[in-house]
Image (tube, rainbow, N blue to C red; front, side):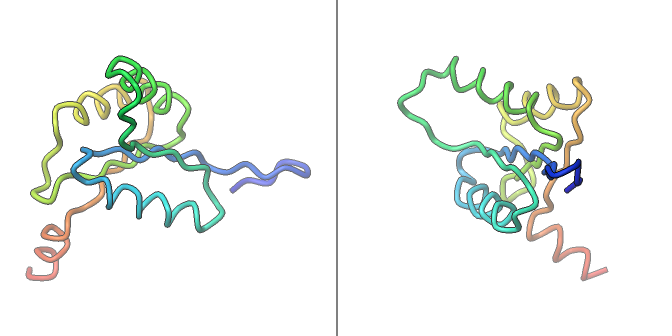
Length: 111
């Protein structure tokens, strides 16, 4: 957070990942929201919206964000849609941070 006069600027985070990881995405978002230090948006199921609208909303959220956090699948891979989103974020100069999977963290301790 940055204090500007009487206002406090909060970093804007957008959390993305395959919807198969929706619980992890939501719990990660809840954690960052709970700190009170960030403005947080995250990908979620919105069946009432068209696919085109979902893609547009995602790209607008990437533009809005200061940072994009990526939740990979349990095997460490990203789906095609998430790969497109990460590529777009990188192309427009956003800071993209990949969360480590549980197996990646465990393998660090085995070495």
